[in-house]
Image 1: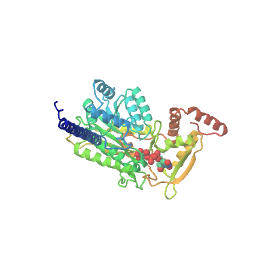
Image 2: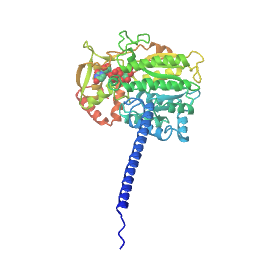
Image 3: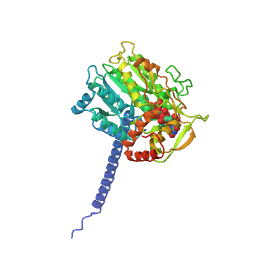
Length: 458
Ligand SMILES: O=C(O)[C@H]1O[C@H](OP(=O)(O)OP(=O)(O)OC[C@H]2O[C@@H](n3ccc(=O)[nH]c3=O)[C@H](O)[C@@H]2O)[C@H](O)[C@@H](O)[C@@H]1O
């Protein structure tokens, strides 16, 4: 009888082989997951790098960290460039920027969905100039208000390109499509006190964004003339008054003011080196319909109507804080006057050919009003008593007093403010109650109070 074959060696060999296979497959698995992990890490790093380059601001400012920014970032990262482009888009851009009057301007308005930007865009369009808007719709304040302004502008054939000042490729593309004669640069991170919460947003919009715009403008052929928004806050701790353009502006009280002052110096440089025609306008606390919800007159109105307490600041030596509140229509006239008298830039393709115009103007109301008086006008218009809480001004960059001397703007383009605070606030309140749908309530309160005692009605 044949003895059974000796399988022990074969079995051992098979077990050994299967062990080796397992070890190898585990190694393979480990190696491929490592590779996958490294690839993912690399892609993530590249994306973070692109993101940082394109959108250095991570705050709520003009280059804000908001949904829109992320959408643009994603579209530019994955769709090669940006989501702006194509024949239909270019047609819309051209159509919006084409003037409809002889010798009309073609104006790029940055911050067109903003308060001053939307008003100026409408005024330019109404008189036959071509207007293209640019706005990043950031969420520094309720973006739905910016969307409502955008809809209004669209009804008047004004198209707003959604994009950021720091997007150099987009700006260059706009100048490729349209030979803009002017830029009205109003996009900025506004607000004095917010600078303590989000300083980087001021650097990103008011400095980096401005430089980006100037770089594109200087390289354009023809170079546009630029009118841009500086601020009364540049006067900072200046004690001479009324504030004149000749007074010192080297003592800013807030980072916001410092970035606006930096803008004025940067404007000087681009004028000096590249021949860009530049006009800076120092706005004094602009208010009116379609205004900014972060400003005192706006949120006081809201809080008074809601029965909430409002803080009214007094100075450290217990004096009233006052502002040279300026009505929006006056500011619009000032902006258009500055555009109309702006001379052409003298450079071309990045080279200066001759000296160019460089200007700075105050645009104020020439009549400061204490904040307490602003509140009593609002109480009157809203027929509601405010719950006033008078406190010493927090150390947050605020200045106690502003007062504009506007003789230079008057001399050069006839700037003459004509709306006093009660008249302007009446127009604001009328808009406010209509926009927020609380007309009937204020009217009822008006009627009720008018029966009791005579008072100003909204
Ligand atoms: O003219 C300017 O350069 C600046 O005007 C405004 O800044 P500001 O004048 O401080 O305007 P508001 O924030 O509306 O304040 C108006 C007044 O109300 C006072 N205030 C503000 C807030 C508050 O809770 N209580 C209060 O009494 C302020 O001290 C100030 O005197 C804008 O917000 C800036 O973007 C602009 O550049």
